[in-house]
Each structure stands twice: as structure tokens, then as C-alpha cells.
Amino acid sequence: MLKRIKIGDWVEALIYVITFGFGEKISLFIAKTLFNSDSCGCCERKEWLNKITNPSYDGHCNGITL
Image 1: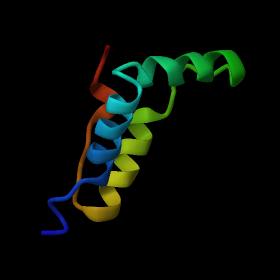
Image 2 (image 1 turned 180 degrees about the horizontal axis):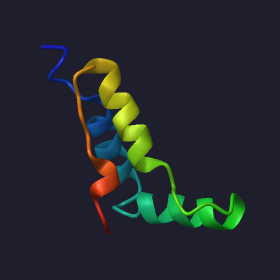
Image 3 (image 1 turned 45 degrees about the vertical axis):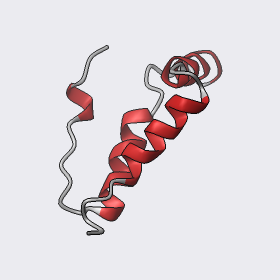
């Protein structure tokens, strides 16, 4: 049962609800202006959290384009 729960998906959904769907845009703006980075780190966070509860998780977030 624990392997089916993906914490990264739950955290992403919570951020989506709290920020009314603008969480990724807000974090990308902050990453570009304050840290001069082209990545907000959202995908890496989601993959890392999902691998905590499911070590066999093989997410492909880097292939997703907006």
C-alpha cells in the first residue's frame, strides 16, 4: 500500500490548490529573478518525493514541456 502513495503528487496538488494554479509560474518567476535559473525545481522535487515512498518510481518530468 505504501508504494502506491506518491507524496510528490499530493504536494503538487496541495500547492496547486493553495496558489490557485499559479504555483509553477510563481516559482519560475522567483527562480529567474532571484537565482538567475531557468528551472524552478518543481519536477525534481516531485520526483524526489515520489521516490521516497516508491523507490521503483520512474518519473519522466524532464520530458514534459509547457
